[in-house]
Length: 151
Image (tube, rainbow, N blue to C red):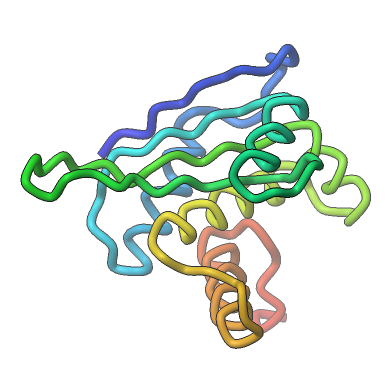
């Protein structure tokens, strides 16, 4: 399984390595018992994510993360999961506003996007509860947030 990282941001001072991003994706897939498949993580500016959000979700504003599951032809047999697009400026701003470590919040966005590629969603309260609970479990298991049960 390969994570193809595309960096389309001016700020190339990324504090997170390719290996960390691949680890978060692989661990998420492993923990939710999904097959390992290739995917792309694209780091973008606000203008690009705003356009994608407008074009695909009819929301004319920037967002933190978008996921685009791959809808291939089964007969071809290409093992590709899809694309995760992350807006670094929005994630950085949210991490400050929410008083979270940048790496933890960024990891959360990668985990969130990966779960969307695996058919998890949060359109209803029940779906949101399942997805948020799973995200919190994954963040704790990857030691990205303190596990309050260990105190």
